[in-house]
Length: 400
Image (tube, rainbow, N blue to C red; front, side):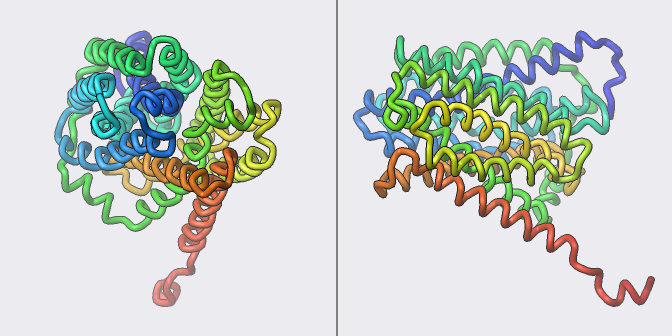
């Protein structure tokens, strides 16, 4: 389903608009972790309890990804993206004015609702613009906005929070998201090829056991990223004994790794079947041990954050392409479910890291929680591959 227009500039602007929207989403999501200590102190709760606001956002994504995508199944993807960005602006404004943790959790939940559907619809539009056979690259382009947010958006938002206040961080995200909405309205193509599909067609994908198996692999495997990322602030200041001003630096290094991994993963996903998952998860396991054992040393911690981000993000385009191949009639839903899996991993990772901290295992213990989660994901992946290689039933052999 390729766009017949030869205008490269219009295509580039459309892809930029999609990436700008994902940049805003990524900035809001990851900045919450960078300013975790700020709103924890402001709202009078401890850090593990404040983590509930991060978890609320992730749960909003997990619930919103299938619910919003299915509810809007028949909408044109351009119209849907505009509606989703408008809702995202509202969620961030509400986050900025929240007066207690419960209200902040509700606002972050609302902010998370559009994310999965945005990436699902955005990946479909990007694939339309780029043409067939480039699904991995298309998804990676949309994801690039999110990963660049970890390099620029989240560190700047954390810096802004430290110097002006955490409420101003969410207001700034809301303003930038408004600009992204205008860019989407101006530059995304208007085409009937972007119309939605019947809800029954989307739902058919959810009846496939293999789809849920890949979702489980993604959720547990990616969770380690968030087990560490959520607690980057305390790890930098209290474990590595660095100044708070180094938190944005650590976030940027993490983001550089994620962006590099996303680019490499996008190219791998279109050429190699499932290799990105094995490579990404394997790298992550090795690096998590290094962080857990020697993360108090900044010269170990910072390179390890880069490699951890790169390894896990390299696996994500492969997961997305594999899901789309399993359910080709529901590309938007599969894109949304990929993000839902990641954010369920976000919630599980944040919970796992918080649990090890509450148990008194030390500031670097979230890395061990992440190790257990990614190891589980790799084991599940192995089981799915064994299941796929079962010999055909005897009756098929006889018929042959």
